[in-house]
Length: 161
Image (cartoon, rainbow, N blue to C red; front, side):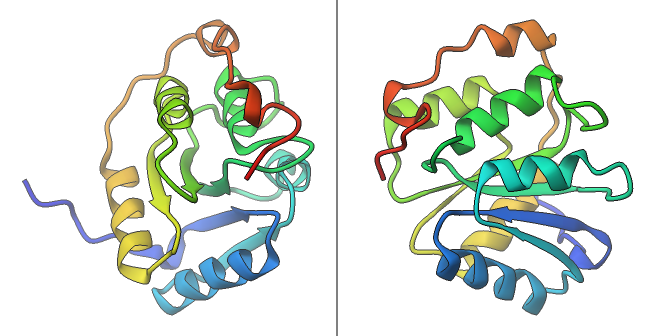
């Protein structure tokens, strides 16, 4: 079954990474692929402010997992739990990672992450991950089911990558 080609022109993205060069690279790849609305955030806290803004509709968050003081996994968990007023628990979430850390990947899957992009990032890899994320069908658990997920210690509050 082929994954349908994704039209990025009507979608709004939030790109979150503590490395400005990665933010700029992903933003440039999105724009060159047709995206018109990309919000750049240097922290999960900054991303939470944007996604909580009732005047901004966000379709997808692309976030590094290892950031301080709030990790990408913590951001994903907060969204899935539903503790941010006005933020859809069902928002598409694609995780960036330097490698396929087994515990991080497993935890993100439990938190219903929609996709992964492994660094170094290529346009083909990014677009492929986004197409899979938007084609993915899932049913979210109750918010309390996500609240009970224990995050790996190395990504809570003080990320190690």
